[in-house]
Length: 185
Image 1: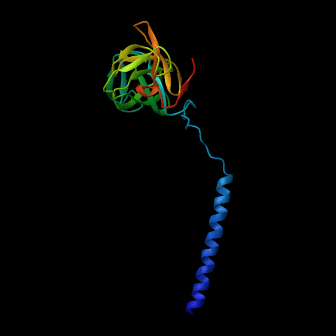
Image 2: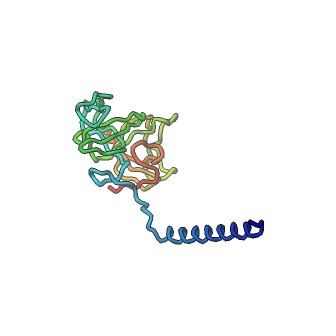
Image 3: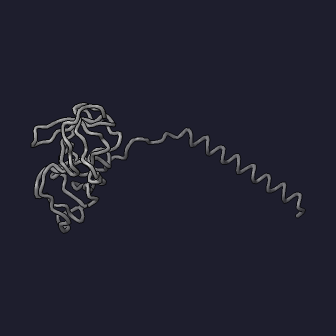
């Protein structure tokens, strides 16, 4: 084969590849892309999502069955947990320390709670309004449990269950809500 005919054949293949790639690109733009969060296979609710612990003395198990051993026992109700997977009546959860395991759905509540970020070195300011310039009514230490009333994506309205205290805290200071997440009253 002569070098010129080899070059012409190679150029023809490259042109064909380019045409094929252009065709694929035009088809890909016509395919709808799913942009919402994945749904749990059991509930159809978004996964991951935050929930709270319904009862004290709740066991986190190594696997999704009573046949699996206990990994952790939670002794305080209301703690926020993140559901990361669903299997039958079991939910794989993760706590604010990164510990994950399986809990039965009966132990979980959809009520939203949060803890002041365990990563914070300084207390989080509880403001009287949803703005940095609002008066500060309290300083909340890391890991303080709060009830989430609403969030606008930047600030959350919270309440401290046993202190009769409410206010606003920056959303980025909470573990139990996602960055930018909005939660209605």
